[in-house]
Structures are given as structure tokens and as C-alpha cells.
Length: 148
Image (cartoon, rainbow, N blue to C red; front, side, top):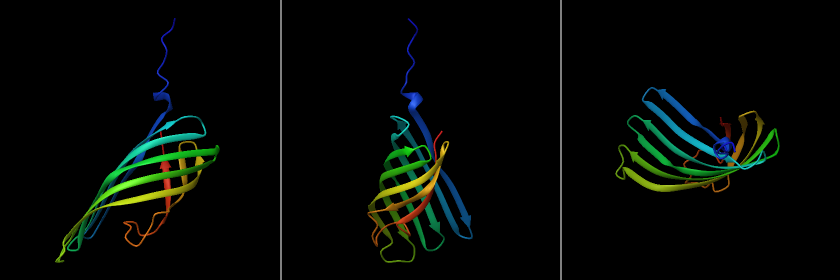
């Protein structure tokens, strides 16, 4: 009897985000690895980690870190629908302020849709939990998602 192959790892895809932005007195570094498990060609579920460092010299320094759970649906091969629950710890150090540090949790629930070609999806997502205290500049965000 031939040995059975482990089917689990054949259904796992790894992806993520790596970004670096530098300017005059400005630094923006982001690392966000993720993995999904494909239950079928139509549905996947995954987890991700995120770390972001943002600093403007003489004004502020931010650290964001946490994780997310993402669900993906592909009703047809070219269309991908997504829902992502993200929980980030936010550490803020404001320079030149009497209240120079803040630490809190930020929760986001993104609903999105995109065009999929191979391992790449380009689309937009909307944070349905967005409010005036959100760490994001807008509830609406474009995205590029890649899984190998």
C-alpha cells in the first residue's frame, strides 16, 4: 500500500505584506505575514499577524501590533469576497505634549471585494466599525492580496 500524502499542506497558502517608507524625518515600516487554508476552490479561512512602526521626527512615534482572522469566498474564479476581523494594540508616544503616551486596542471589521487573477487579488475593503477614533485615515481602503 503506497504511503498517503498529507493533504493539509497542499491546501495552505502563505502571503503577506512588507512595506518601507522613508522621508525627511519620517519612517513607516510594516510587516504583515498571513496564511490561509483553502477548504475548496470557493472558500478559505486564515490568520495573519501585523506590526507597524510609524514615526514623524519631533512629533510622534506609533507602534501597532496584533492579528487578524480572514475569510475568503470566491463565487466565481475571478471574484473574491472577504471579511477580516483585525485586533491591534496601539502604542503612541506624542512628543512635546503633557500627555505623551497612549496605549489602547483598535478593532476593525473589513468587508471587501476584488478581482482575482491567479494568486493575486486587487480590490477594496470597508471598515464597518470605523469611527472618529480609528487608526485609519479612511474606512474605505484599496488592497492588493497575494498568496503563494
